[in-house]
Length: 454
Image (cartoon, rainbow, N blue to C red; front, side, top):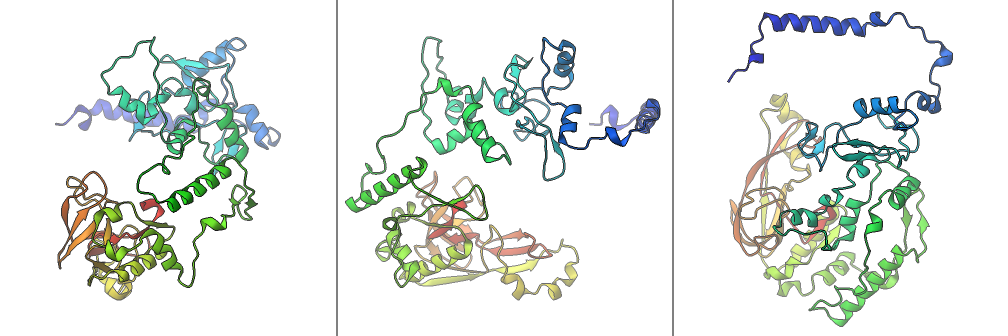
């Protein structure tokens, strides 16, 4: 339905003309008179800027008028987790980039914009919507009261029907220190080492209310199915990692990065590469693979993790050749998308031979080699309902011309038998001037994978 603003009348048009004229008159500077600035009064450095522009909250007792002005016109309303319905929230994030982190000095960012200093002001705060708004690291302090709502355990607790009284003690355990601790501790984008350490040590008043428990027993060593040799190796690795965290191992400073360091790995934790480094790496992870190449359980908890896709391809091809099954090779069908600009010249500028050599992120290669019993990983969301999601690992059970039959071995649909079709998907990451339509099975062998897919 049409609204009133969709069909403005003559009054609305005249009002718009007057508003535009008034804004142009104000921007011209005529209402404020002629202004002449001497070179001596220009800001020469950051100290002069701090003298004129301040991001601090005035003291309520010393300057109540300025405090009242700042509280009414210069303080952003609470947003984020405590006020997700605020108008600035877009996709669960503040579109105005609030809340701002504190800074001990005024600096310039990479785009040339000024980042004014925001010093610690624990004594001065402004109350809005019954929430204390501080000036030092506003993001953390504004979340002071409902900070636990950021924890997944508390999110599940809010959905519970149990009501706790004040006399009862609520105890919860942070099960993943590497993940949950990082959500509680503040993060300073682009901060120096001194700024990060200072924020970690002194910014949170909640640490006084928590008691930190440490595990004295390695739970992986007590799991079933481990041999004495495997338990010994896990114990050595755990001890070595603990020594690194306790700074009991010396390190070598990295030349090109001030914050990076090189740590020497003990010889007993390294593999003997021998004459074939890849075989030395594969045999401990996939022992007796020819006897278990059709066993889904065998591949559920096994994978070689590396850094580069080129290394992943070499390892996958090496293990694939070890399988006794026959190999099926699928070649893709690439074409230039008709909607691309200047698509009529694509045959001359981008021949098929050139396009087939391109490797795109998140897309299969031109040549896809598979065997029965090969573990594969989906590269796209095909059908989430039966479990065909991006990153799902499967075991190949059938290889046909148009579909691949597989059994899901990870996720919530383990054991389901599914069929994966060929799909046409447009890909382009700047390597080609045109949008390429690649028709292929969007899967890859996953004997080995890169870190972000593990």
